[in-house]
Image (tube, rainbow, N blue to C red; front, side, top):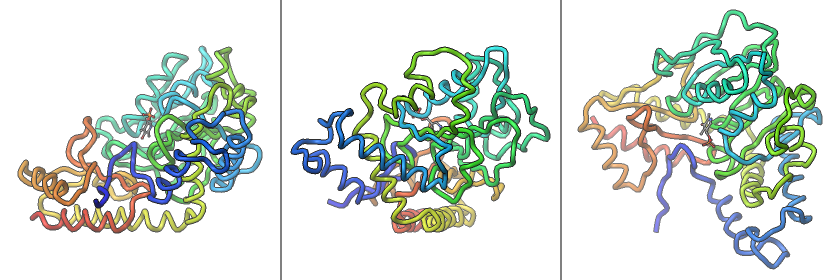
Length: 354
Ligand SMILES: *Cc1c(COP(=O)(O)O)cnc(C)c1O
């Protein structure tokens, strides 16, 4: 049976090689004689997995030892509240650039801990464009939080301006998708299930000096400092989830981020060109500079055209193109694991509807 083509936004498709390796490990992990699902989080095999994964993250991000790499529980949303819990003083303020639903939710979570200010927002435009970058960002903010890719409406930040306060980024849906200067961040994080593995694990990379800025007492599970001290193994780590992320990191490293970026640009161009030249489909994001390479969102002008594309996709074993429940229409997610061949097959269907 032919595998279904999967354009889901997350959990998203994984490369066949990664799935194959993961399945092998579920069966039997290396010389242990048993499954990776049964592997101790305190044993030497998992220590190796952790070590190599941390090394690869730093290598791919071109970061030195002034950064710590963490694998944490709780997905993207746990970072929404871990960040302010650690760094936003009760009497202090942090700034949020609201470029989408996730960015807005991150600010709402931060408001439990201190003053979480909206520095700029494109909510009035339904997040279908990027907000104008604020003219002035107060230097005294505890941090500035950005979301590099808006997964739901399909915008993506390009060049990220310098800011005085520590810069923190949610990169859940575009980490390792393009060449990027990661050294501008005091902290960045990504839920793994989009570009980096499976649900249940999040990557967080924190600059060491930030650990001295932690503003309150909290249970160690939620403290970046405690997690660094225990090397992401404070409680039972998500052994299998971290292993799948390691397989993804190896896969990304083998291809190289410049090559991945090139292919991602091509895939996105194929879909945008098809939508832009279509008489029946309309892109959400009309400002080309604001468009996401990862999530292409569009609607149909008529219910007939919408139904036609859904039916055609079903007939061709293509899944996952329905838009987010907040946005409606269509969303095609083009993460690293998505091949150009898959995209070409979808584009043929889009072009066939006139
Ligand atoms: C998916 C997503 C999240 C939420 O991740 P969960 O692991 O479901 O909490 C957060 N931020 C961005 C940008 C996302 O795309």
